[in-house]
Structure formats: C-alpha cells, structure tokens
Length: 168
Image: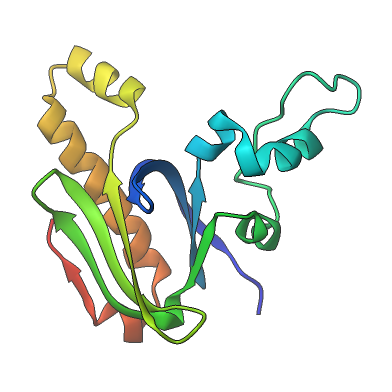
C-alpha cells in the first residue's frame, strides 16, 4: 500500500534536548518530524546539506520540496523522527499553558513508551498578514491549530482517531 501525504505543518517547536524548531509531515501512515534548527547550525547535518546543493552551483543550498521529497529519505535523515500512526497510544491536539500544541504518546522502536510534544506556532508572516486584516495574534494561533487538527483528522485511521482528544 502506498503512502499518501495528508499535510505539512510548516512551523512548530518540539521539545527534544531543549526546544527545537521543526516541521511536521503527516501522511496516512505516519508522522515525520523534521527538525530545522540543526540545519541552520550545521553540525551533524552538514554533510547532508552538502549533498542537497545544486551540482551546477555548489555554493547555493537547495531547500527540501516537501511536496515531492521521498518520505523514506526524509524519515532517514539523522535526527528526524518518524512515528507510525499504528504505534500511537494517545494523541491530544489542543490548548495548553503556553499555547496550542500536539501531545503524542507512542511506542518507540524499542517498544518503550515515548512522547512527542510539538507547540504549534503560526509562521510570523501569517501572523503579520492576519494582524493587518484586523485579526488578533491569539485568534490567528487558534485558527492555525484548528488547521493542524484537521490534518490529523484526515490522516488517522478510525481505530486511532477514537483515542484522540480534540480540544479545539
């Protein structure tokens, strides 16, 4: 069975060895968390970034096209996380102390319970645009979280969707 992209959440902040900026690719079979900050800092992903450079212009970095990138390659990038939807024990999408977020409990590769927390942060350009339209930052954050929630509603199989707490 082939895997289909459901949506990409472009701007988030995940709790892992500190707070890190991330994007979340949601498919009909899994969630892939793509960490952004290490790309900016270089480090262990420097070689991977070098492999993404255009051969005709080796100094110009290429960005990842999330609409066409091979999902298995994306999940295999060191540091990224891939969580199969069948391993999700509990999922909650809603408002927390610091704003809106996704809280996921799942069984990791070693069959131990693991957690993923992603704060949903609307892109600054969206907040600025909506503010110019007269919409408050708080309302923009809520609408962004509702769109992210809808991505998961479309992606999860019914047996997993029954366990989800939709709090928005």
